[in-house]
Image (cartoon, rainbow, N blue to C red; front, side):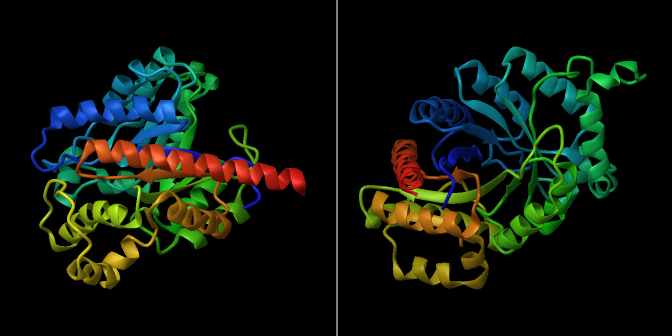
Length: 344
């Protein structure tokens, strides 16, 4: 790892734990953001998901405003807005408004997946499939609405024109890598659940990257699952909540986040299942020292500029502790990298 400073951020899915409520989970998301700001995290992003009683991140734009209004410096954004679900004009107006209210702090991550099942996607937007197929053009529309040149157009998002809202392309396949490179935009890969194409997508993006007025050199973010505790055993116990969640997704029996249990032979067997193993490949579980070594290897392998973590624990207190310990891991890695550069 040659980079002197690797940024670290949080992807917030607003997952409701068993026995919890959406209201409390939303309040916990704010408390998490405030702690993340204290711990030195770069940004907190909110995902967009629909048609699940156990997910509170249905309206990222609203959550971004709520979090930004109650924090001071951490960047807040979407990870992402699923653009085919929306009118580009309306999204430009929403994020333009946020940019005026919280200048220099708003990010706009854009993806093309529905964030839900096909039936719900069609209920959200009847022409969803057409919009998904024309995703590059939808991106172009967003960029036009934010440009100062759009002042002469008949259709305007005047509140967005000229505002500072960095745009990120999100993806879980190589298609998004080509698009982000072509447009000269930063690229965030969803390797916290889609590990298969990570390295190939990063190579494509870097090799095809075209400098733009938005970005002069490639910038990459990788999503990872992180569970840090005082001991490896304690962290593995926390990890069982995520294993159970993914098994539920694969079997169609999704529930609220389940309380953790000891890492039994049954859970280890679940982890060996090809689908579960592939989805959870980039999960970093253990004590600070264990996770630090794994993260260092991952950074050397991928060369990414930033890590964005997902830590879905049942206990909010355990989540805050894990997030704090991971910030300490990243600070130690960054200090070591800086010292190595000085020596070199």
